Length: 282
Image 1 (cartoon, rainbow, N blue to C red):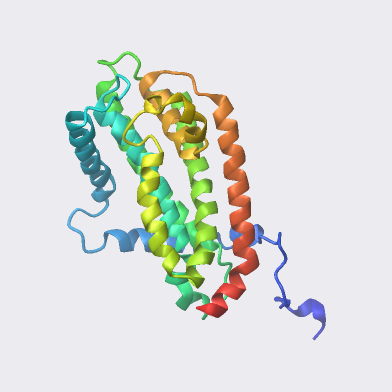
Image 2 (image 1 turned 180 degrees about the vertical axis):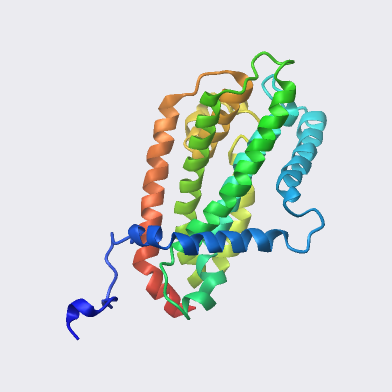
């Protein structure tokens, strides 16, 4: 047998920039199987099944309306509180869903990784696609609710322009979560204490984004630091195109895209470089 007849080549080390993204395309059937498995597992043995996808954010939003709008009387910049909190919750929940689906890649799938070979990036990418299915259904629910308010509030509008921006913001948040999640997945596989720390930090991080309050409440001296968070750009942009009619600040959009690109690149690089060593420790 000649060297050209071998299908796999085992090398002593993994290069820094060999991401194997082409393999992901060839394995798209496997990715879809993981997505189907995760969606079915999420709603098996539930009475209302996939209805939880829209019921969960609706219930959370109603709680936010009572606590932050009626009790704390926080401003919603003149927009209906239900739509204001729902828009923030959808973006935050999508980020959290993508991050949680990515950061446990090694811990939850070690039994599969140790038995059969396939590109490990398939797991986090399938988790993001699963989260995207849920996120898009929640966005569709938001647009339906938006239609009921459109006649009463002149600044509220539904347009193709707004929908394209919404898709863009979801993509940006997905890549942001994947980058952070891949870095955390390598760390938590080796040091499990980090998981507790991350969960605690994640709860606090929600209040570092304008999920339950408008960005206009942040004092001017902290605005730059506040807007360096890509979630701020996504949530404020989401509200701008549908709820307030304000122009999107492209300056912060480009900064967010640059930051997300760098974080995602670093995350994939570290994941691919250390994936084999991490599996040896599990």
